[in-house]
Image (tube, rainbow, N blue to C red; front, side):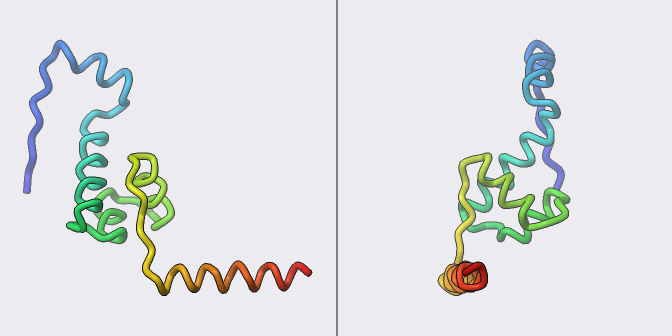
Amino acid sequence: MILTLDIPDEFSGELTAKMGNPARAALEAFAAEAYQLNALSLEQVRKFLGLESRWEAQALLSRRGVWPGLSADEVLRDAETAAAFTIARQ
């Protein structure tokens, strides 16, 4: 799919100055919205945006106010890992 945005010249200078690359900003906003609507998974967001790790994808979503959800299994694994570190440090 090809999506084209037509940004009037009168806005392009300021948008570029404040956003860097408006096309990239639009792509990231689109991916964040798609993730929030469960249209893309975290891994799909990572691939869609050409990011190297899931951590980069999570950071990007978080900056856009979209908090990547965790499954119950992931929360339990994280809790077990934290407990193991706490025990190991004692």
